[in-house]
Amino acid sequence: MNCCFVAGLFLAVVLIYQLVTWLRSRIRIGDYHKKHVLVTGCDTGFGNLLAKRLDVLGFRVFAACLTSQGAEKLQAESSSRVTTLVLDISDEKSISAARDFVAARLPEGQGLWGVVNNAAIVGPVCPSEWLSRDGYQTCLAVNLLGLIDVTRTFLPLVRRARGRVVNTASMSGRIAVGPSPYCMSKYGVEAFSDCLRREVYRQGVQVCIIEPGGFKTDLLRQDTLFKSFKMSYDATPADIRQHYPESTVEAFSKMITRASAMASRKLHLVVDAYVLALTSRFPPTRQLVGSDVRLFYRLLWNLPTPLTDWILLKLGE
Image (tube, rainbow, N blue to C red):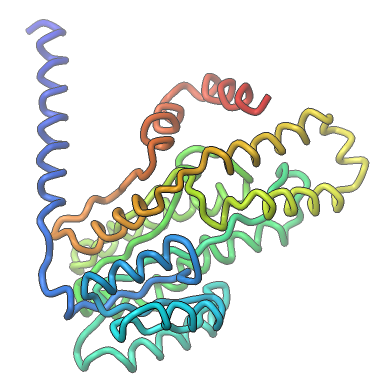
């Protein structure tokens, strides 16, 4: 058996597997109107759009917003199928109160079909050494620990419905592109989701991971990113800053500008991925969303590390 035949057979098996997986994922569940879903981070961006999309599809949605203003605005723009609430996922008491709020409004004996952990922040934007412990904890408290606390708190309700947990990671959870606190938090989301998926598999609960590339949401607002960078720069002692030449500052500025400029406006792609995770009878374990992550970054994280480092350093020049 020659090498070409073996390689061709392997490729054929992979392609058939991918096709069957894709076809299976298109088989949908029914009775959307009987299913309840909790979505976090609904003030703006993906969460806001998802709550509205699920509303149109007929789901019963608990849309958690960080602010009362965001909750009131979304409620006014939605039907009675959407119930808004205020939730700060970095606060355990707020999460506990949200669970009581949701549980009290579920029909007797029913659980949550889905929990979508969408809420996130970008955190401080600067070189790692410039950050204090608090700088790291601020980001981790929302993106990782908050996500974990929401999942743990609502998991009994999801188990009751034999539903699914949908966690938002990022391409930065596969390859460290961006500020280190954000990347660390998203790597953590990947690890937590993988562990949880295997732990609850036999309980009838599915865990799905969404891995978006760069999209033009509030997380990538250029003015906010520059403000964060400037604050970190001003707060860093001169004896530390002296080790970072002017080119380092310029590189971070270029990174911010490039990330904001290249971010996709097609937010519906991420919403589509969320909806597939919630409506497919056999949802994909992972969904890479965005041409940047599917065509470029996916290649980068499979290259030898020194080559990946060289490419990323060149892009920052």
